[in-house]
Figure 1 (tube, helix red, strand yellow):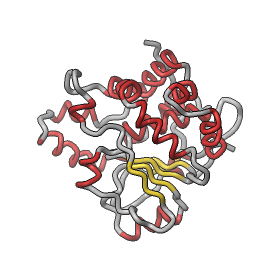
Figure 2 (cartoon, helix red, strand yellow; figure 1 turned 90 degrees about the vertical axis):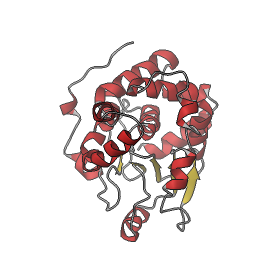
Figure 3 (spheres, rainbow, N blue to C red; figure 1 turned 135 degrees about the horizontal axis):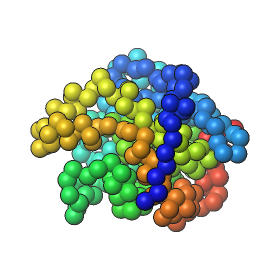
Length: 258
């Protein structure tokens, strides 16, 4: 598999701090605005947000996100996660909450794979085994006035990371920048890692195994994008192969970049 290598310090900029949305009750909430594209455009600020689980948000934190005029929330978590930890913004005025699990259960999704699945393999499996649900996510985002939109899962780094990577690749953001954005989760999730580690131990993982699962090294996204480009051409080609139309994809891009 082709590898994409880069000096990530070039891309982790002071402006990353301005993308971060500090919230009580969540840890990995940020928008992906301000990234340059191959054709000289830039991703719009405060239009596409990525986040970890929003089930802990107190009222004040909910109001912070609503003040950002979020119109659409796409919840990628599996049904069990959504029932046990419901999103606090469900039912908020002016917000379309979309329950769109990428898979219904881990056991079904990961059938036949040695455990634990490494992060690159996890992303490849999402692309290969979840085309219908990924298509549904993008169909939601292609609807007029879907943006500003927030996409989230439990930690906001893998399921969310893949969807955001596809969106940024579709918009023309270079792979190196996408990978650097993915790596930022390492910084923001650090305060909650002990909680994730404790959960991992309850389901049979060692602390070392779960630390690997909870990391988000840029190299993982580089390899994921190399697979995407090598197998499918790019995000646009992949999304068209799974059922999105050129009109839908253009509608998304028009909202993401300026």
